[in-house]
Image (tube, rainbow, N blue to C red; front, side, top):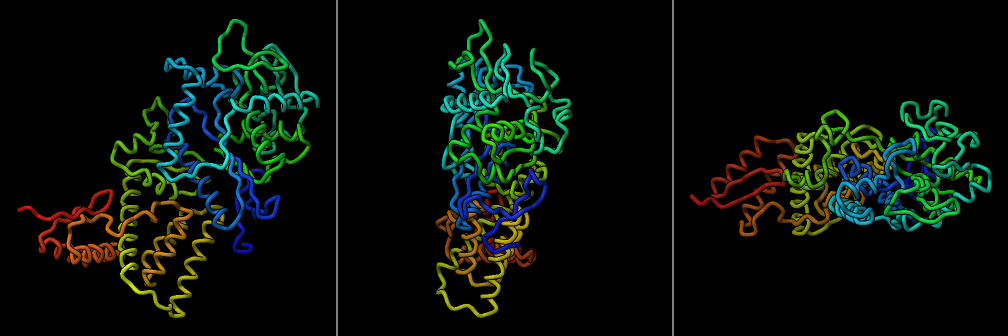
Length: 480
């Protein structure tokens, strides 16, 4: 790996892991495909944004100046990739008996509440498609002036055959690009891979969301919003664009085509794509009853950060298999981590910091370096969690251990900095019992379960019960 501030990322465009070299020194522009706000944010969405969050926090930790932009798709996303069917927001409005504007506002709020619960930071710029109609129309006009469009009764379309490298992101032959995906056709559409830039409102149709344009009243196609808004806030060429792997063959392919056709410049340097979340090994679907939101997680007694921990256990380019058992294990591990951090924090607070021996100083520096190296090599969060647990178990002084853990949590955001040194302990429990609990937790972490059971018996003899639950360890005085 290059110098210690360099990040290496898998670039979908080149199909290689490369050094991230920003277009402008230490400044990085990131555009993240955001939610289509017609329904509840589900756990698949959460995983994508958690790993986006790790990337942004890592860049800032490494002293890059980051501008993080995310869109809100509140118009123009049709239910079919073939540019047919209803707009998802209009469909949601009919389903719920509300206006499309009300639906968008409700689900946008839900999205941000969900993100806050799993410690995903809010982007620097959040841009709604409906607030940027002017920019989208201007981009369509620019493409029209350059001869990349044609107009039919349904709307304005991009002629994909006029962009020679169409499909370069997916690496597929354009004639096979969307095989099986675009079954429906639009009358007058010239080629299967052409796509709508501006959709005209059908005669006699009433829409909540429509605008006047040079081509008639209508609404933007889904893809045009991301090009118009990303280039407005990050420039015609920028560093990183993130999204799900499902965006590669259609949405991001079309973004590249329309953006580069309009500007004549490379659009995005690095394309970062996240893999799917499966549920019990199968695709998530409402019809299968395995479509889960954060509310479902909380209603079963799980902490939102247990879900974040679970997703960090799998590399972002691999499928993550969600099961309730896996989430239970993640919550147990997180509770143990919180308990350990509480004990370390208390010990650090009660200790006097002293100079480290050369051996322990080397150990501190090595752990810090390994943490940094694992996370900056293509966001290898599973390995990074492993280093985090090594820090917990190492024999360096508590003060230095706690400092290292706080550095780790700047990026991982598992709530370690907010853990009280009395976590899991009732406030009226005597200090000697708290000390025994701390000792037991340390022994359990070291897998010395026999010794940990002996300490538990001491606590029981002293008149207290110890209960291990998903959220930690509960201690209560026996009532007899």
